Image (cartoon, rainbow, N blue to C red; front, side):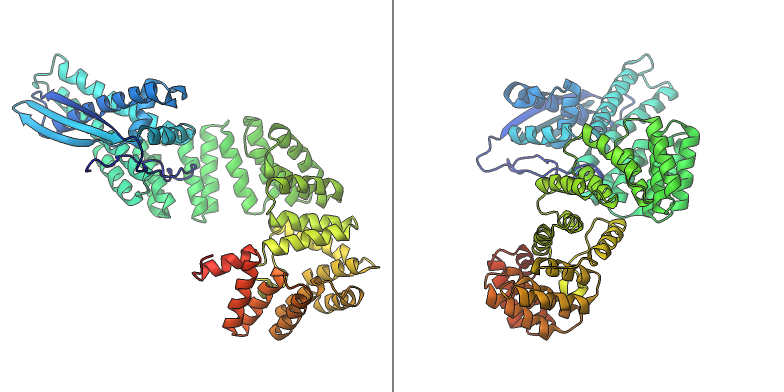
Length: 567
């Protein structure tokens, strides 16, 4: 490798676990080289292949142990609270050794190998890896299996039957060597996965399976890669094999159920959940997934029942309370979900989704002031959450605070003005179909207000426009133009309404009027650019889009970037 760093820092993890970034060593990094050799005396039971596998495994063990010792002594890794074995197992997945030389002299096999790496990069990757429970657990298990295979080989070759006269011992020895080779291949497969080489990882894991056809973990690891890459039938084949190997393992049935859901086979998924629960009646996760499948089919009462059972089996289930609350909301029950969200927030005051959902429940129950308080919290955490701006706008409207309602609506329009001419309303991202329906119901109530000033006429016009009552909306916008001729908003919304009706010439006219009033109205340039595009006036469209981007409208910047323009 010509002295270059030999390190793979986590780029993407195995499937549904969080991903890490690959980090390459900078030119000024402090690169360290660790080199070790090992000589192995072959026994009569050994072949060239078994000798090579064993000597490589021993060299790896020595090198990783030396690297770990260095990291513990010279870096912050000493504070990671890992056992020496776990430290070595995790590090071995991040750093790959390079063979320097191999030789054979009669029964003696020798190998020298080295690791060339930047210890600080290793520590950074190791810190991320140790915090990922599933990933680190897998790698620790692989490391332990390699160690166990080496111990088994040592016992067999040094036992009383090591002369090779006992066929049973010889068979056990061959199987032990195959096991060692298979687990080394598995570790290599994981290294490939971490470097984003999924196809190569599948090939290596397949070789491990060929050596150990009864080892369930190899199928499980390979299934995850197949699933990640969308090869669902191959993933299902591996799950079916896992069921054959251990038909009493409830977790395998549940894993297959989730895969079947991805394949659109909900009935099969539900049957597998049932099988898992028959094996283990206290399996909380199976009840939870069963409830999720019922919810997906629209059967909320049964979904609620299974979510309750999941919580009975595991009161600390992380997802069941929120799913239970949402299922109640879908049934039109709003007070009960609030209690669940109260509890979720009490345990985790930073859980944004709980405030959002509780706000929706408060809004549906007509408690708009409390809904607004929850939406305020969400917007402090995520100021660019369009759906919450929209929902808070509706809540303000129901309370008669039309100025604040308009401010929120305008913020949402500026944050996400995509497709506003194609769909009338610039977005329907209220957070799900049930929230869309709630928003429409609220808009229908708001449209009955009796406006007395320009602000109220403007907000009612927007509400009517959202409800696709374009003629009535236009009347309100006209009234605003008369009452407040310097207000750009009625021109913009009326222009968009005409765009919805396919009259892009009028869209251009009204946006141009808004620009005359306020030449820095970025959204006006954006809307007019879309209208010009529909009119096939590409030069004019591009110029307006550039102007909108120059005024800081992110949607315009994104649009230009999609066309290959740079800032």
